[in-house]
Length: 525
Ligand SMILES: Nc1nc2c(c(=O)[nH]1)N[C@H]1C(S)=C(S)[C@@H](COP(=O)(O)O)O[C@H]1N2
Ligand SMILES: [Mo]
Image (cartoon, rainbow, N blue to C red):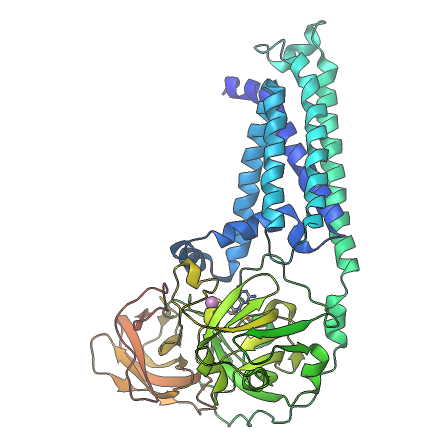
């Protein structure tokens, strides 16, 4: 214990601390200068994004299954810890072997620059914040560790005896901690300043708020009464924007200026089409309710949401471009490099796949793809729902692969029929007698015609279906259960509009969506 305390007070631990202070300088200087560049150019965002791009499917699946929509917070925490440990090591190396330490810092800088300049939509000049940060960090590290080397002449003596030894440079110890504190404070100020500055410089959020939405040429069909399950605690049928699940690879939400936004439609087409945001506002827009679902949603999970979307049928845009013979896929690409491959015929049929500009009567929220995203009924988001959309390439499945397909996920992604129990919650304790069970089921484009509930290994019994709004929205249900005391399993399954019963075959989300029946255990008292 005593030994550990002495070590903690000794020069090696101090060098590690110097490394951490220097790392804070690297990141905060990059943050401050980064305010004048794209957010994707800051080293933490770029490194995190590069990490995400190299994430294998099983790991993405694990991250989403374990952390859900908190996956980004967990990634940042993991990066923070990694950076902290690396900084400690580099601090110690810089103290023992100055040249090696400097080389280490420069190597880190090179890795960060490489990660920045290889991001989509990032220009070489965007490396400047990272370069500035690295050089500042290198200087600070040298300044902090140099005096430590003088302290090391007394490696074994506990530092608190310093005052008794007139030879020992006690003041440099105090001076070191003062220097570290000043560095940390300066880094904090620079980072905060960078944040404030970049928020002030970005007026995308206010441009979004000022946006006036046009009236649709064709409004959404009125929602019938009784779409909401009568069971208290079941998810709202219409998901408020603030509660809509968010899944994407974007560590910093892309910021797009609608004045500059343009959609390029090209590839195997008779004629290339370019569409401005004005063109979209002036076009014949339609509105409809569509339920989106993520392929990573586990059985019983909540990565699904239902909203009213306003947009232009993609069919119309494709008609203008004129797809050539042989084309069977449209590769849609986001400003940040994400891409999705959607079957061409799905974008041309009457399901009204659209270029959406509004969600529940508001311009798309920044996190949900402002200003333009795709909404394609019946397909999982990873093969259809490209947010921050900027490019449509008409091509062939044989010629091109999308973001997740390249990483081992399926090429196509029709949504599987799924029923979910929302009330009671798993492991709930309920009173014996009448218990209301309720939830939601979906099979977009096919519709839900039956939901059945099974208690333990009993007979399957029909649930009461709530009203159906359309084949592309989810459908709620309820079931009255005469519960007897003890532990029970509630199972649920849906039948889609083609008459097919939801499969009980358990499948993981990778590669094309989870399947199986949800079973919820409850205790009846
Ligand atoms: N640009 C971009 N668009 C994207 C993604 C992404 O990572 N980047 N993820 C897709 C996936 S996997 C899903 S499930 C939906 C989720 O849309 P939401 O966040 O609006 O719910 O967006 C899709 N569009
Ligand atoms: Mo997804």
